[in-house]
Image (cartoon, rainbow, N blue to C red; front, side):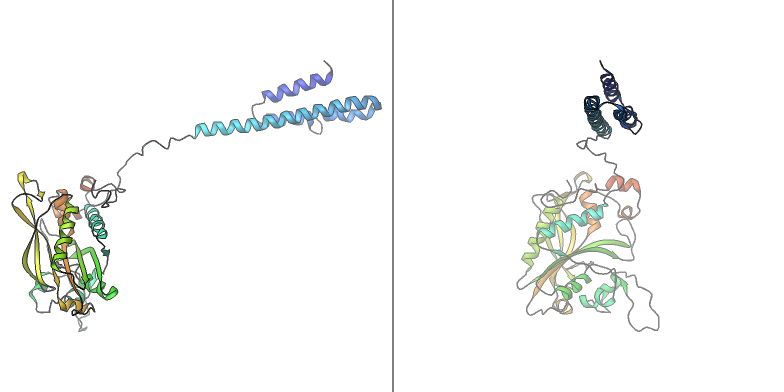
Length: 360
Ligand code: DAH
């Protein structure tokens, strides 16, 4: 074996054994660097005879290329191995199920609002909104509740502070969602189909009353909307909401200033063994107020009552939640007790839809 073969074996073995890029660089410098072994040998060519130079020069070039190629190949191999090692370490099985931590839950009131909204959206109702601090006019007058009307007292209204020198009546915390009827009519005109879920306020507090609670208002106005449409819509709603195939509703004559005629609606149910069942049994439970919109209310909303007519209804969302999910005390709804929220709350990503199931 001549001297070049020895050199070649030495460097190729060194390259094969190198464990990282730093070791490779050391070998490159030792062989091909300015003062490397091969470079020095190249420099010696000058002292040789032309014949010697030809053969030795060629052999040195071949050796230099071989070492160079081996260095490059090893460098790539080291980089690949490093990537493989990293991929193996950072590997993650994305098919594993997530860990449900249930840190936060959807409050039953939000859940029921979403359920109600999904059901009415399916029947072509849009969602309308109004302010919680409402003017006396929207909350009462526009709804045909005159200043001396007893309904004003029955609403146990919270009044906002007003400069005593100001002759205008003070604003109120809205006592029902009905003022949104007026705002929606003014904003959209007729025909119209909306629901308006939201917070309302009355000075009242016991096991079934809290000073703040939630209602959902509904309203549909068209050329020939009638009580029959109201009945169908409410029956469809109750079937979907209580997730039963049959419901029976009873329309009981009643009185509201904003509807004529007015009806309170009861649903057939049973309370066997303290367990509420909707759609069967011999009991009736009141669930909402409703009626045909009073001409004066249409007028207040800027809609001609000679041309249009409509129905409206209003119901308590908290009460719906208590009934559907068997929650006994209304006050607990607003105490933010984490144990209560974990027990009665809903998973955050289970959005209720009519087609996918409301409460799962
Ligand atoms: N606003 C009524 C209340 O708070 C509920 C109501 C009754 C709303 C009849 C209506 C209706 O739209 O037609 O007690």
